[in-house]
Length: 257
Image (cartoon, rainbow, N blue to C red; front, top):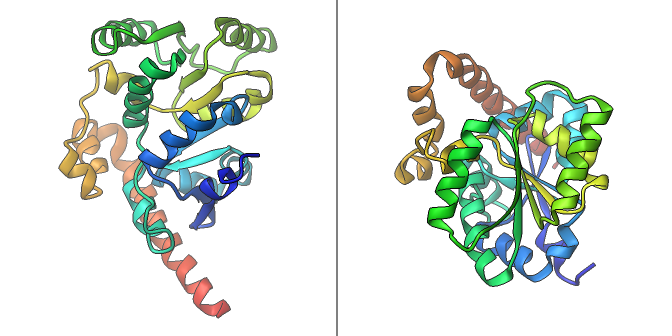
């Protein structure tokens, strides 16, 4: 293990879920300096929703914990983490992809995209070809939106490995994408990174929240305004649970002093 890798990937406890205490610049620097360390493993891009799911589901908690990194996508995660690690900051899925794509010109990295549907992948390919003309797209494959058979899993694994990609971007939505990565990571050679709806954002299909709303932890509100029927119950329940769990977590820590 590189001397500083373990320290660089240290974690902070957020409602009982270990989240990597990093920021965009530091994490991208780790990828640049030691991508081989990450290959054959997977990265979670974590937020309030995934933390609450991990808190409530021991199996999913294990999926988050056994990743090589669980990045603080959600602003509340980095705000809480800063109390212990001041340099901790957001690492969102779309922004991470952009940074890695820019660096790929220098590093020669290639990329495999798995998930969403064919329409999204077609539009993503067009957008990436315009914005990052140097980008090596090793392959693209849509999701089947259902559990895969053993033969189908083998086919996906072979497609990703045979492509020679350095990164496999997985967009199946949480918790499915993290479970997928956890189950298959020892058989897949590139580093897998679960990025949820990032394909749709980068393809221009789904609008991205303005930066000022992201900085004020209001990205959830922007998304709620876009899809109120689908997201109202999720945000009402998830955000409330997160606040309750965080308060209880603080009180437990006080009680141990």
